[in-house]
Image (tube, rainbow, N blue to C red; front, side, top):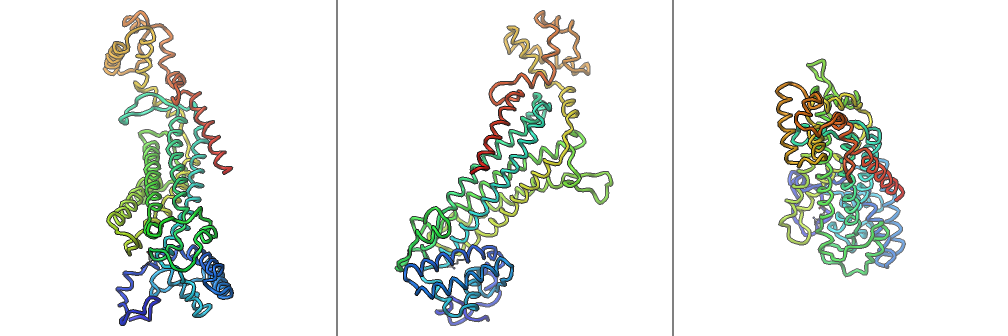
Length: 464
Ligand code: ARG
């Protein structure tokens, strides 16, 4: 049996320790300590201003809280599971500092609006960090793409060689995905930017609180307009988990490609030693572990999203203790995506692109078959017929063990008098890429345009 709780008035018996342990959140919500203190400082400032507390009481509480904040930043706070969560731990530490006056801090407030406030403050700050790391990843991709506008690689559909493309173009596809992610996280900030403080337990309070003031003191855009919604809304966290899931999916796709590219079969890229690991038994191994881990960690982020969606799906208004389950998944997601973003940027910045091998991969294949069909179509042969002719030719070449560019001109002319010597130029993979100048295509000029647009975009965001 343990000592009396802050809520212990109506109880005769205390909790058993193992039951208390089950209900406590301090093991993980201590990460909210600085935000909890920050919220309390705003709250007590308002209580003093509104005459709910005497000015000197408010000042004394504020001073105690400032000291706690300094202790917190210096890592000097220690917490106790018998105080259940971060809110009661902070209050109890304040009581140790300033005595029973600390008990006045909780006037016109509940842990329900308090915890929601902490979560908003925390996530709002983390979103800035995430957006910054995402910006760096996008910049890395643009820089790499600008070095590889004219690097030719096979473009795939069904993981089969389809048509040659620019490696820069391939990278810029990921830039586009990460830019959408960035927009989503930026929008997420709007919903994290609301203050629940003053909603109290669920219904508001009879004290003359100034919710606009606390909202402003904490740097929020405005207070929630419905007290029930304020204490029970976790959409801003779900949006974060959902945005993070999409982000991880994009990172995972890129990592999957990197893993393929550095396999012996492809050899398109070589990862730097600093982002690779060896094998304890096979001396020759150099494994893309970090890329595999990002791919693997997408699972836990999806799990965190599904976990919280499931917690929320049948919750009646307003606060329910189930909501305590919103924290670990969110913290884990913040930790996972921030480090994954750094690792991916680092991996891309330090890898070697084996341009020649990439380009050669487009020469020992039939990825120029569309070029030949287009060539014939340009000469007036209906595309369907051209497709049929080239298909047959590909079959003949496969049987003979050579490629379209190896077919002699005489053979071509036997197929159609319209074919001339310039066919070989059309069949080169570089020409195939260069000519695809339709908007957003892989043609060099289009890739350059994408890169320029992206650079402008990144610069504009930087100055925001
Ligand atoms: N530790 C709780 C949580 O994380 C704080 C709010 C508790 N409120 C309550 N009425 N029990 O959700």
